[in-house]
Each structure stands twice: as structure tokens, then as C-alpha cells.
Image 1 (tube, rainbow, N blue to C red):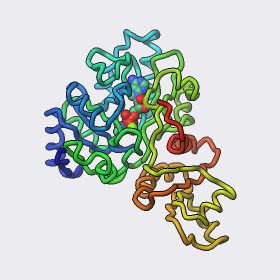
Image 2: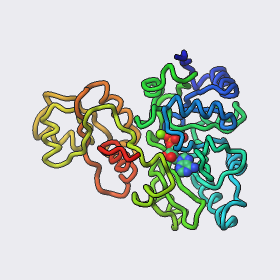
Image 3: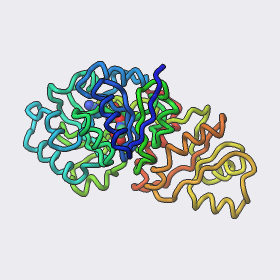
Image 4: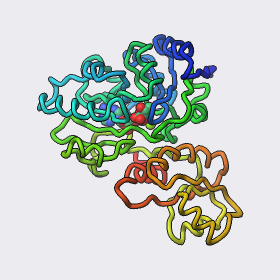
Length: 343
Ligand code: TXA
Ligand code: MG
């Protein structure tokens, strides 16, 4: 059992200390604009293996490498291994120009700098430049690219605050850098640019509509194709709070959930309406989330962790609206409420 050090991301000495730990091959969780990541030196295979074991992550699920600039990202890919080198390079430039630094992860053929431990035996590597100043400062101070999967035990919700990191990794990692709550609260959008059609492998903080504005050929991957190939991490049950039963509900079922004893995660306008129609709930805790998809996403995982604290029974979640702007939230909720373990 390790003594997990608590560091302050706004204190430069603490950040230097965190960087020193990373240089020594230790594991340091740190904030990004999406969720907290579990950082380790991407060039140190021992440290990378320790990330898999701390998270209890299957070794078949590759890691995202974090760098502080596009210039550093180019070194991690090898475009000579790509079919249409010029076109792929141009696509990388377009997306990086529009979304970096920020919550977009780009996958392309890896260079020999990236070990198979990082890519989980894959010929490609996922790279991103986070926008949070603390993340980039830490990468710069460490002087090496950092692998950083979400800083949670495998299959649990991603952490959006330092206390969530400690919930599943306290004693399993060397330090956590506290930078407060994450701005987006859901993970980066992952796109694969290595093939003929640029494709989203994981829905996330940047919606498909925004990507299409700068790259009209961008495609969302269907679940069927996803099961066949590509993103191993997408096949597991994910983001699920530790509760025996989690379900989506709307209409009469939502009313029943309001009246019943289960914990409830509900949008503000629905909570206001049910409060006016039926009066306050007399049993079960409610967490009220913002009516807009961005606010809802930001507070979602914190609501999951809160629900775990408040109940050991079931959690009812209001079904998100069937509008395009809710697609990333809907994806996360589908995974959290899926009964199957697909792996
Ligand atoms: O916002 C984020 O992306 C956060 C922060 C910390 O940067 N990181 C994160 O990492 O969510 P992780 O490991 O929890 O999720 C990475 C996802 C997984 O679904 C993984 O399978 C996929 O990206 N992935 C990584 N490398 C890949 C590769 N070479 N090919 C296909 N999928 C890959
Ligand atoms: Mg994760």
C-alpha cells in the first residue's frame, strides 16, 4: 500500500515535485479539462505497466499519450506507415488547429518511440494536447510525454475531482495533483485518422457536429463496427457507479421513480415540474442536474459518485432528450446502465 501524496496543482513547488515523481517512473494523477488522468512517463515501460496494474486495466486496452504541443505529437506518429500520407497529415493539421489544445484525441500509426505496452500491441497510438494549464505545465516540467488514462479503477466512472481519484486509487498511486473540478466532466472525443474515412471511436467532450464543421467527412462509428475492431476500451461496461441496479426512465416511470425510494438523477426542469405536481420526495435522494447537455455532462460523474455514497440500492436516471446535442451524454448513460459486460 502506497502513501498517496496530496499535491496542490496551483502551487508551482508542488507541480515540480509531481514532475520529479513522474521522471522517477512514479504514478501521479492530475487534472485535465475533461477528467483526471493517471499520469506516467510514456517512455518508461515499467511505469506504464504500473498504470495498468494500479487501475486493474486489461493490458489489451491502449493508453492515450499526452503532450504539450502539436510539434511533440508529430514525433509519436509515423506517417510513412499510413496509406495516404499527405491527406492524413493535412487532417491532423486541420483538427489540431481547430481543437488543440483541448478535448480531442487523435489516433494514427505509431512511431517506434511508442512501446507496444502503451499501444497494447496496436500499430497505432492515441495522442492529445490537453488545454488545462496545470496539465500542460506538468508535461513540460516532466519533459516527457505522459500516458494518462482516466484516474479511476477500470470500469468505474472517470473522476472529475481529486476526491473521486482517491475513492478508487488511494494507496495504489504515488500522488494526486488537486486542480479542482474539471471543466468538461466527460472524456475527450477519440478520432481515428489512420484510414480512408476519419472516424469517431469514442463520443466525448467535442460533439460530432463540431467536428463536421471543420471536417465534413468525419463519421461516427456504429456499435457493430466498434465491436469488430478498433477501440478495445469501448467494449467494456463503463462509467458505472457501484450500485446493484442502474436504470434509465422517463414519463410514468420517471414519476414512479420520483415517488419511489430509489436515488434519482434528474434534470432541473423535470424536478421543478414533479415538485409542483407531486410535492417533495419523501424517500430517496435526488441529484438535480442542469438542463443543458454541457452542464449535465460536467456534473454527471460527480452525481454518480454522490449516488454511491448516499445509497446501496438502485439509481434511476432520467433518459436524456433524443437530440443530437445530447449524444455524448446518451452514450455515457447507455454504458453505465448496460447490464452486459461485453468483454
Ligand atoms: O479525456 C480523456 O481522454 C482522459 C484524460 C485523462 O485525457 N483520458 C481517458 O483515457 O479517458 P482512457 O484510457 O480512460 O480512455 C482512452 C480510450 C479507451 O477507450 C481506449 O481503448 C481508446 O481511448 N484508445 C486509446 N488508444 C487507442 C488506440 N491506439 N486505438 C484505439 N483506441 C484507443
Ligand atoms: Mg477510462
